[in-house]
Image (cartoon, rainbow, N blue to C red):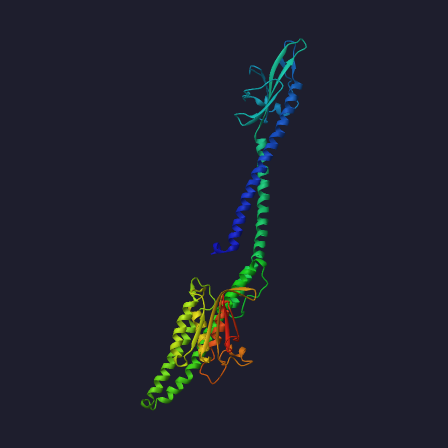
Length: 447
């Protein structure tokens, strides 16, 4: 389960990066210290060679003579770790220190007079070779190779001691850094935990939206979550309103049916009429509940086709009024929208126009319109030659259950549906007086 934690993953990743970094640092420091120790050892061995040359003498015959006691007492102690050798140029061993009894001396492959060669021999000892030409008072010259060796354990011991100290400190520093990093991760990811707690509060009903103080980088996410919560609440509220409307609308037909039970045969037509009315109400409310509202549609709907279909249906319903439809729109008007929502908006507006008009209705569709510094796909305008909406009633008819004229049949929810769906889609609904026909004009800006 912890592998799914973002904090755990970040901590493990940073721990691995620190581990690799410390390994590289330890390697570089150890290698640098080893090189420095070898350089210091070479300088000490060079001093030892100079001390041997200072102690050595040549007799009149050119023979090498070494004193019984050398400057460094380690040359006199077998196995002390410091060994001295003197060879002739032909690699003939002339002298070895008492400490080198039983040891073989290594010889460099290439060495010229007056030069040093520093290397590690086959016995894992550091050796410094120096080629010198010595001339006696009588003019006799002799070429010698002076070699001083020291066991590698002296360098190894120093490197091992460094390794122990270095690893101990790096481990301690690593633990401290990981602890600090863990604290920083906890602090950095605190806003995400705050969002999770606020979402839980929203789920439990203790909050209506995310209202905490969040970092700038998370404000986009919080805004989208709040928008999603708002949409879901709006959908839920609309479903509740639909159920309330359905229950309220069924009260009257059910009361009439209840009164017809005692004399069913005498009220057959009334019963049929009320049953038909109930069926219409249920179908209408179910159709409303199926409207999706604000969603990102992935397909287009042709507004022109929908207007033509609704016009043909309304011509049959209002046949007795002999309505004249003046339709001005392009042959195709594709809009990203749910087809059911568009049917609801256009159907309710055209039905209201047919209900209130005297004889003429004008429908206009304009593409690529701009309103209030926003671009819209299309503008739908529906006008009629009816009486229009009385002064002061415009805002009221957009409220649930309010009708412009209480004497006209209806539930007072048609314009509320149009207003709610237009807002959920991200469009804009405007109403006013028709300049051409003198009645009502409804303008719908579609996104």
